[in-house]
Length: 469
Image (cartoon, rainbow, N blue to C red; front, side, top):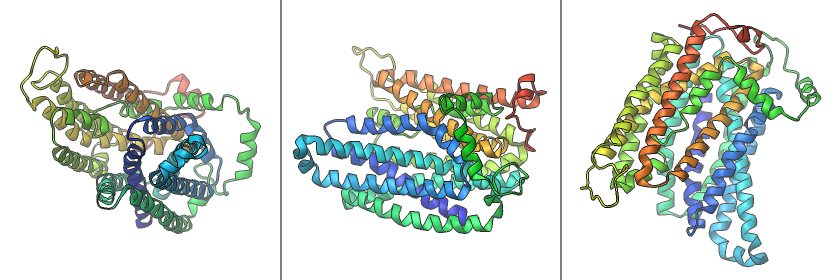
């Protein structure tokens, strides 16, 4: 499995480097305004919502190797192009603003947003292809092996999430932003060739990857037939039909539960760290807390296979959600502790107290354990219970759903932007986590109940996996 792990490490490293660098680079390009950063985030998120299901549908009707190579090349070439545009903007912004009455600068902004959004879509495609399809085929019928693969890949991602930003920040601090963008472009060129070679060897070493169809199909996937079938269908309304298919699928409640985890400010992102900074928490302490949160998350991801063996998949998910809700209760409690600016009149002066922000950050880093257990559980449910030729479509809609909930979070932050209203964001976030737990519990309950008439008539219903309680 070293080939799969190494390719995932290379891919995650490039993604995390780029995700950290691009925000700082855009702020440096337009320090007087957040319009460019906001436009990039909005378009990137919007395209993922609109085209996630289309990407998934394309994956379903395309042979595995062709789908992977296309997404791999598109993702890396788009990141390289975006990084080159960043270099041009950093070095020649003045010249561009003077050319074509300023249209040259605007054109570069537009091109950057287009290519960066394309890279995000291609990244979604790659994650679905490898994370939701290839590893299921590689693991075969052994669900415990699948759990181990999921756990290791997620642990790699969490380690890279902690280390890659530090490496990128080091480059920016001791070299320059231009050097960071140039190194990013060089890394993606190098990574693309290495990943292609690794995936080619992995593909050749697992003949089952060359077959795509029903679970026991022995004939190669007929790509031309799939394309003709897709073209014969009315293209109008495919987007909505994909979402209808998702909400009719037996995994829908588990998927909704996963999406609810994205509608939260209770994480180590720019929103919560910005709030903590406004409450007087030094940056170095935030860095330590982020590191502790990463370790807690690793404990969850690495212990997931053991919990799955001991409790079964469904109960492991319940454990993850319950643990997360209990830990995040500290965050809700923090809203009314000394030091909280929640609903404090301007005329009232408080003495500096760190009780509130301490409970908030403590609840967040403790909740990482349950978060990644719940995430890995639902991820495996989507792998096991979605038919092979529907994995792309269902997981594409899931990605869009996750992005939609993430966008809702930012909209709420825009509507409640001040420190004294952050308590409302905490309460709303906690409510969505509890809602996610309710939906997941409903999914588990329905799994234990006899199938309903609707489920029996639903052609997408699949047999319950061996991981049932």
